[in-house]
Image 1 (cartoon, rainbow, N blue to C red):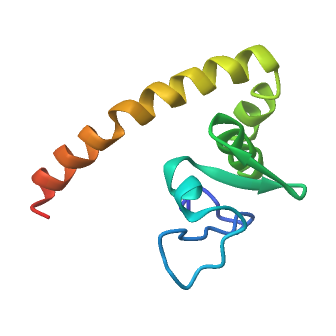
Image 2 (image 1 turned 180 degrees about the vertical axis):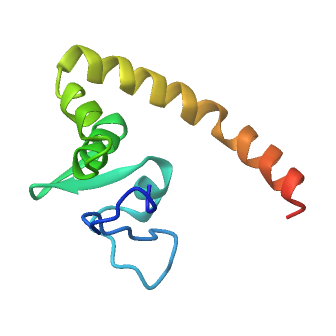
Length: 98
């Protein structure tokens, strides 16, 4: 996403870094993706949609995700991804030799 954000519209913050000041509980921030849009903290699929809206190439997807039905489907997919994420991380770590 950083490469797609050529205009620097998104400020990426590493919540795992102890020096980072967190607006929410650090565990909550690390468990799900979060974003702030118009002063509101969003989580999960809504946070991804906000990030997409900030990137011109992905803005149409972000605008489509304002539809409640579509956002609900994206949120379900995101929750399913979170269930398999630890396994994916282990596979990637093994393949990269970490």
